[in-house]
Length: 398
Image (tube, rainbow, N blue to C red; front, side, top):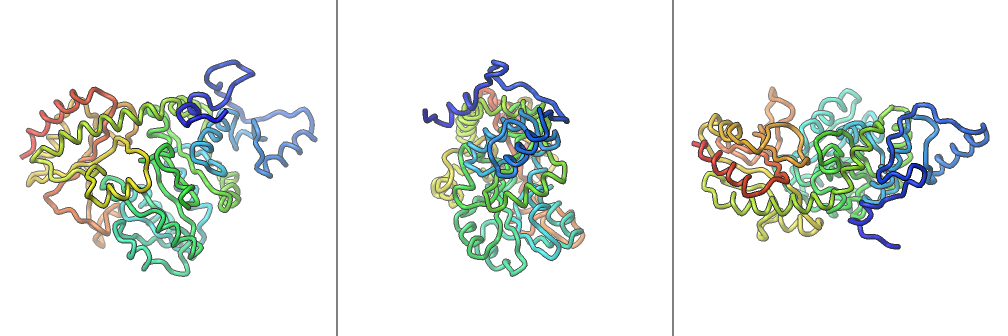
């Protein structure tokens, strides 16, 4: 029987052995076989990428991680999904598996800070050069491609500043130039966007965030097509990158309610935005909510829904008053990450690149010194309470 994604997430498989609604946590290093012949036969099945219920050694995963791989494989419509111990591990896995000395990578300038750090600093130690392109200029991306370009890394929308890009134009160009493509799809999740279906070779998600949904698990997923599978599997097996069975269990539990939670995050966010857009102290809302904006048009072109992460731009002569605003919020926690049930607020330092400045800065920065970006994650609380909290906090801004 064909099932909708919502139904699939509730009933991905049946555990006929343990009879439990959720799959058990299987922790194992040694996997036992009845004979050498059975082991050899099983290894051949894995090499041919046939569906298996277990691997041959715990470093490659357990029955619990295989269950999660299979759920995400269906959700992503992917050839295979690799699991890593942290979200960031998925980005590192792709770069380390595919790039070699002398290669260049093109990176969207609005990526997550640690992604910029590994691209700009760590890869340089392997003689792999990172170039950063303006996320709102396809021409800039196109002009920076050389014969050495191995991979284009896109984050959509951009971290903290939420620029949307024309994704199919990027994948079409990359295919003509025979360049690998990787999309960080943590904001949209494969529920609202399936990157491999629009031509990306790899789709990355931080499972720490919406997949888990409870702020108590860490993990990453890298969904891949058949073209890159072999190279990534080679590095994956030898690198020791893996997710524990306990983390996989928590993420499976979170995925059961992914669709329900994202719908409510979206509803709450719309209500909050209707309040924020009327506030004179807020200069701009960084989120695809205006039908006339380019960001909205690009979001509408590719996504079937929107989630609960946005930023607001506050114009103020005093950074201290913006800090007072964030610190005064009672229902918005102050902390890194997002995607859980709770609301969060964080002042983001968006700096322009200078020769001696911190490497996480932006090469392309349109914001002035008196414009401060506060990132908000809208959680699952009653939006009326969140609005009252924000209303009280905004009085602190001078």
